[in-house]
Length: 251
Image (cartoon, rainbow, N blue to C red):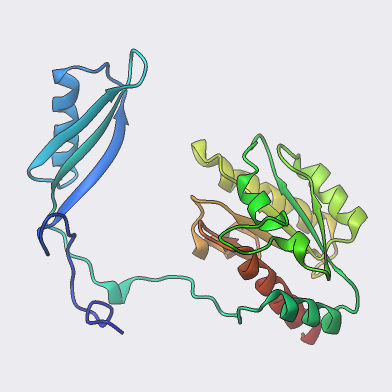
């Protein structure tokens, strides 16, 4: 454990150690002008940046401007008080996952994946499911003992539940990238409620959601078994699935 992780207070680093310099980007509903740049600096000041320097401003159409502001903050953070979701299961190789699936289920593990609602961004779900995978790891289609049913984008919750029932899914993986007005949270809650209503208690498939704007600690609140955030690899997902299914069988 480093000295910072041991509880020492830290401040942001910009040009020199401990100078408190940070960079912030945002958009204001103002046409690009000196007034708009002044408004951006004022907002940054109110957020605790002092001094705040507008280092980039670019029109976004006729009525909006995108800004990058650079400035100093005086806040300190204590790493020892940060709460994170640690991986609580072993990370397995594809060979180990296949062996455990055979031992626990004595058949192939069935995974149904989709992007639900109006979300048309399949990059995330494809990175986990497709054989080409992500970050140098093969996707779940590569695993001999896993059957993957990838429904693609803009799948309705009722259709997802129906396919999961037809395929006798052990796990349902959902990717959500569109987050305007918390659409990812609303869609996830709708999905978890639909599965609870459609399956007898304790028999629903594992529900796993992922996306760049999810809080990994919000699984219980959203009614799912696991939340994965950005950077998750296929191996992490596969390892979680066999770990949790093993726990279910033992329980």
